[in-house]
Length: 217
Length: 217
Image (tube, rainbow over all chains, first blue to last red; front, side, top):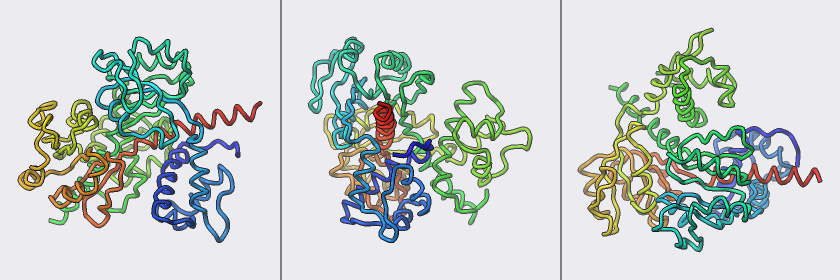
């Protein structure tokens, strides 16, 4: 694998390539050119070739990409073959929904434990995963080195919980709390889910439509 | 407002600008140059000036941008001043979480109704919003023209529900079902939430770390 510094924009496109490749496989397409792939994804062929070039030689001049092979490479690049372990902290509605419906296994991750402070849910097993008492979190993480924590606690305790978790050797936090966790100086990687981005994108398109209709009048 | 065709990449950056501007306001910063804004967002100054140029003249040569003013413009571009109406279809764990925690009002949207088929939840009021029977959805939408539907139903009924909704004059669907809704030929705009994208980005960084440590050995 080449060792160039890869930009964030390229990295953020990788999961989109994966989704597109899954979609192509689903539709029985086993070969695609960078031109056609670009067309379907709103990218230029040269951008696609450039993106892939960071990771090796995937396509073949005049032949294009073998979809299944490229999908496998992409999954490998995204760590899906590593079986990274995941714990969920906060089993409210959102944590619950992720445990029941997200499908960590399909993405190559292993959800191994959940934590909450509510006695109503501690001790339950959701989708095969036990819910433990949050008070046991620190001890548990020390005994069970865990790659990723999904943070779905209330916003008010998000920062303090993130700091606690970061001190227990967790490598990544998937942050659903809609709060900046302020772990900038830590070597824990944080990925934030910003629900509002896509709602506001809808807002943009609706407003654009409304404005152009007003202009026509 | 200029009428050039604006690329999807630009549109997807708009909510990020909004978040950054909110963050600057929170930190008491009232003026910023395109250079500094670019640095903080991982964009070039010329990219930022180019992005904004589609919507008008915001900055001032040698002075930069007035943060509060730019934030207001950005909110307007994203339709946050329009009071678009929203209904949630599917009040399972995820729908419930959005009703309780998302804060539609803060984003300028009005959540007016929710629908579910479970008798356990029909008739309840969550965060001030009534939950109606899904069987009443079509009639209700016809009587209450609604801009956006949040789709949080189980995957198995996502497509049929989306088609029903699209036929009731809804303008946008915010799709949490992790399924392509296949409304391509409809004039309903769909925005998909892809949770997995950011988890896989975490996977990428962890795998990169692991691979470079292996290389060192």
